[in-house]
Length: 386
Image (cartoon, rainbow, N blue to C red; front, top):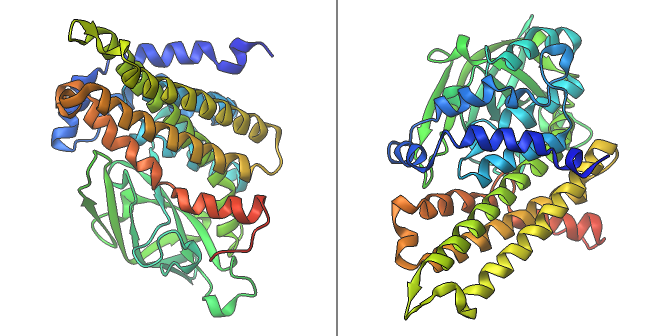
């Protein structure tokens, strides 16, 4: 395989061209009002980028995860943000691997064309956080439906999605042999439920992330909308989390690239005391370090993506890619603010917006401490810490 094919150079060029139509002022205006980037998402959909991982037989491109990573990386490296739509890429894996033929034929072509939006992922709850096995939302079987009651939080894009992948408990914890059993995954048609048995409440945060909390009150979901086998939902969700971490890591690499480029150009142009500030080692060295860390993260993401495509267990690589890329992005963000000085806090430079956005990678979709615990236990063989 050529370097161009590995790098997906043609895809990257196309994404950069599309993102050029959505410059900083577009994102600043949305950020002020906390408005969803509808035009940007529509453009990505029309160009086929959000259907990258959907097989060709269902109207998608049938591309590997490395291509999806290239798309999201370039979105962020261009100064845009993929959080408005990235879930469609990593949620897709659960349906592709564990969904039935009828479900795939019914939903995937419409998702690929943009007729339906699959952007919401209902897993986290206020009382359980990252302890997914402790979630309390229940789905009780009644005839040919399941009745859902409970609450989800940090469910981003729920107000802008037609479908939601929902994880709920179908068997009480005391009724299962293994802790990982008793949870099931459902594909919920939110168009039929909102305002009646489902209430969505926006949560305003430090960045424009369109996140919400959702309340379910006797929400009826057709039994045919269950993904896979009842009680095995936690395993299905886990299988998709490796893809999620690789793709989010790619976004973090893109952010790091944006910060390094922004700081480098400013350091060359900004003149103080008769010389460019970039001539000073105190300014040079942090930029150089940020670049080196970005390149290391880039290689880790590429390695994780290639192993994902080859099959097999890639938990360590996916988690470490997310850890290293998130750290690289955060270091680069801090460096970029410092390089710009007071102007780093000015809205018009976009640095403060991207700074706020990239901070999320330290916490979501999984915190750095949880990854370190995973590596300590599952890679290094140290005793379980929780």
